[in-house]
Amino acid sequence: MARIPKDRIRQRRDGYPPRVRRGSPPAPGRTPPAERQPLPVGRRVPTSDDLEVSTYLEIARVREGEEPVSPPEAPTPPEAIAILDFGSQYSMLIARRVRECRVYCELVPHDAPWEQVARLRPWGFILSGGPASVYEEGAPMAPAYVFESGLPVLGICYGMQLLAHQLGGRVAPGQRREYGPAMIYQADRSAPLFEGLPSPMPVWMSHGDVIAEVPPGFQALAHSENSPIAVMGNGAGLLGLQFHPEVVHTPQGKRILENFLHNVCGCRGDWTPSSFVAESVRRIREQVGSGRVICALSGGVDSAVTAALVHRAVGDQLTCIFVNNGLLRREEAERVIATFRRHLKMNLVHADATARFLGALAGVTDPEEKRRRIGETFIRVFEKEAERLGRVDFIAQGTTYPDVIESASSGSSAAAKIKTHHNVGGLPAHMTFTLIEPLRFLFKDEVRQVGVEVGLPEEMVFRHPFPGPGLAIRIIGEVTPEKLEILRAADWVVMDEIKRAQLYRDLWQAFAVLTDSRSVGVMGDFRTYGYVVALRVVTADDAMTADWARLPYEVLARISNRIVNEVPGVNRVAYDITSKPPGTIEWE
Ligand code: XMP
Image (cartoon, rainbow, N blue to C red; front, side):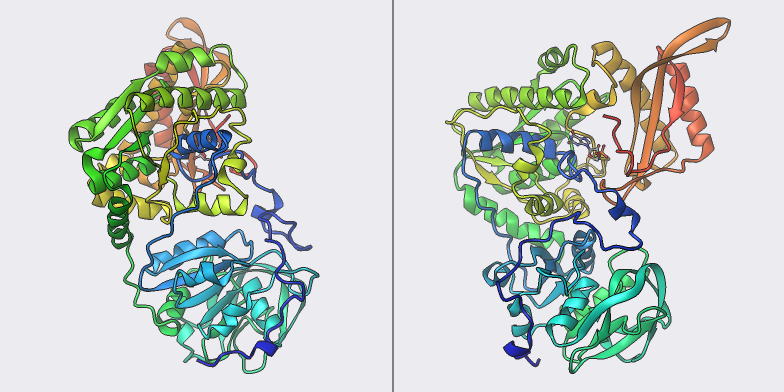
């Protein structure tokens, strides 16, 4: 493949600009809804139901002045794609789609040095979209190695504009911002990128700038009504798309990515999470040697899969610590113990610290204060249990790839989350463990696939996310044992009915919230004065945005009837019909 001569690549004179920050102001004009309301990055844990536990520990270590450990490198699979992140809200989605095509990829900052990318031995590059305009002062450019490598490059939206701008074409502001559905018409039906795809074809546009002139050697491969150059290519592996193939609104977008990966980059597409993990297990064994490992179990999928993997690698050298904070749902603690101790035969320490947690929460009504106290108590309990075990060398955590990406975009992950857990105290200085994070490069759905493979029960692997502070943030106002009982009973009904209606897997989360409002009702001949329970059921692809689920009326009716009849103290059920944004999924 022809290399692009260095003097034809436009670069900023003063080196590479600082990273584009997520949530930078969007270009003027019509703005996509998700960009209109900046999301509260860092306030909550966006993806992982288990991260809470790891976050407490991470912050505790940072508090003690421990140097951040350099992250372990992923085992490099034979084929990989490097995705350069220019700050689009869809960057992570591109990575997910590429993985769905069974090609390993990593999302790296747009200014990543070559050494960071070379480790992957990439077969091609994808340049993501981004909020900047290429002709703006200080706009981020693609590093020279992208073009000098001679490897295929797919530029998406801003990424396409970079190809045009840096290789001698011309980008200009469009007449108006194009946002929403569009049809593209292929000019060259034999282009490898279009294999198996119809013309015209629906796509999703979101851009302000347009390509006014393609760079030398390029031609327009497709147009839309508003973009004469909706797709361009040079016949030698450099391609640009004005639209977003990664979003669901481009129905055949995955096929376009697949065509790029297979037909242009030459990838076979034989990567699977399990092949990756087999290699990880080998590495864990090598890293741990005869050392001892602990793992904090929360009952969620990430820590469960981590524990199961580390157990597979080093067996009894692993001890899991399950801190029962008394804020779990009905039968949850029993299930964790049964799965890990009896079924998987792991060493499990069950620390039932219910009384201690409830004591710490007595009289507390502020949600962030609840979180802070739960975090602090967790660390103190964990510390005591870990100390009892004697010498421990490693700690295994269920950090997943979205957590890694989020933290890379916001500095240190601990720093980003410290806002929520601002006063979690440190672990004692003698407690320094080396970190093992076998899921560090996997997406949630991949973690689940691995979970099934290592023999975890489906119920655990496909569990909905559950927040670390548990039911404490679903009880508005003070947390008391009585209120916990009421909420557990209501939550049980919700879960039971959702599962009975076979809706569980279609939903992101479904739960009850115990409000601090009471209302008047009648039951038989009696007037009642009871709590109002709110039902929160949402659909989502990730927790950054969510919509309230359009549950069938019959299901809503059954849930409401059963809660009012079966849960003493509750006489009214309300359904929360707020999407996120502007609402959050949890009420606190
Ligand atoms: P929100 O309420 O911010 O929730 O829309 C997004 C996702 O994060 C979960 N969540 C938490 N998870 N600790 C956690 O581990 C927390 O403090 C916390 N708050 C919210 C929530 O359940 C949803 O999945």
